[in-house]
Length: 345
Length: 193
Image (cartoon, rainbow over all chains, first blue to last red):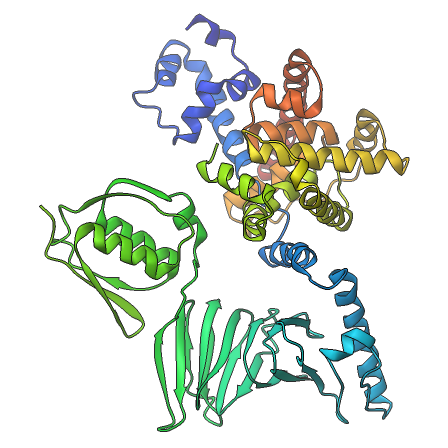
């Protein structure tokens, strides 16, 4: 204890036990530091200051935005997965072409087909307006970057036409595509496809034709969907929700994504391994991680304790394992999941 | 070590692209925030990170096991950047940089009325940190943000443990001195207004 009599601010901050105590919440009552303060009352201010500084140093904000992290990771993965030789420069060249083409279009020139060599087989031309048209006539998925910075991953045989206007960004889609939209709150991003209008500010989602119908599945952010021409009263979708537009009766139905993705990664990352955990807590963690409402009878599950290591298995597989462990059943109901259980012994 | 890190690293070395992406999702941000301590040019840092990760991927078959993946990546990043700087003849002695930075003009304090108390403190701490030398910033980041042990820091900076403890102490003292001066200034502004 005597050593604390001469402790400086630096000493406290570099003391492992002290840092551990601050990280754990820093409650003075009952801690060894309460005894230190009792013996050396003049140290209380130093202890407060050291705890404050440690917390502040630990909470320094990150210097890189989520969007930038995602973009950088995608660039790296693109390079790695690219079957083509050196994908990144091609991608860059692309943006160059787009810009050049817009310029050409403005001058009244309007065809730019087959001039881009290998690139030309995926992406083709610009029509006589300011519209940009992207066609994927290849056999693999193709990613294109729109002039506003948004990314579109086009499935084979799909095409988009992009029109940038002062009031917003409009896209006509034929086929299936995943969109990662650059946030621009002043200019909403709208996708028109098969009688369905999808409108967002900045987010990611997939649009897919399903027979005569069209579906929209949200990966991140919020998305508004509506029937074409009825954009004023949209249906709002959040991550892992899916809207299907039934062409036969012209109705939009909200349901659950076919392959839900983890929306809230921290929720599962810190809680990957559940040890003797009440099943209710695990359902709640899944609910948060996937943004999917899960209803269950808290009282019935009271005695269900589960030890489970979750990894990267798909949502429904996790659900299946968990339900089988506690002898329960799950059903998809609307945009959520319902658990039926008779409880555990 | 995070139990999953072992699996990720093993799968990465076996050429699993999904594991590579996982690794990036997990550590790209931490590497960026750390790298910024000695590569303040963000665009250059992003290029460095891009090149480093591609190199690691291409050399995956020759990489060793590691008991601490984040630490391993930090070390690789540090080598990559310093190697680049040296070859560009841009490598400047850290303490030399410090002198110049100590005299850099101070950005104005945020408006007291408008900013929440904690945000204000965070901003103040950032200003204090910005006044330290790159090397001091780096060691404080490693110790108090990443919570590395002195042994790990010594290995990363390639200095002895005694030198690490010494550097850490003096960095913290400089930090304290600037912080207290600033706090004093803030109090006197409050009293005068």
